[in-house]
Length: 100
Image (cartoon, rainbow, N blue to C red; front, side):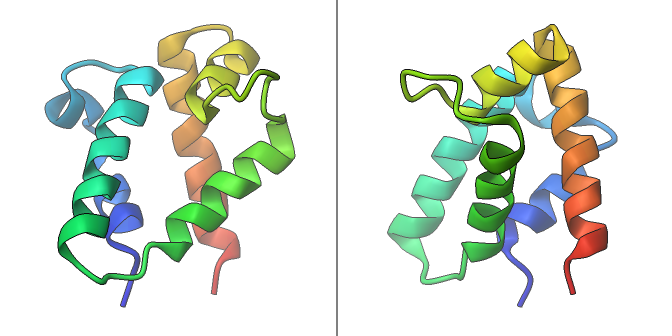
């Protein structure tokens, strides 16, 4: 079964503000933290695909020091919150293309 977080992100890509209220990588991070917590608490679904993707982001862009979130790192790298969201979805697309 496909990771439910990755499946939802694929749906969100073209209209993220519909799901998270604005085009913001920080808002996406907060939404996903809650969504993943609910899935872990109430299901036994495999979320390893998403975890692999996020680890790949950290491998590529670093952790930003001080334990910063991937959203913070992407905001810094891309030069803004909305730009960080765009970078996130570009990286997600590359991840999906490279995954079996």
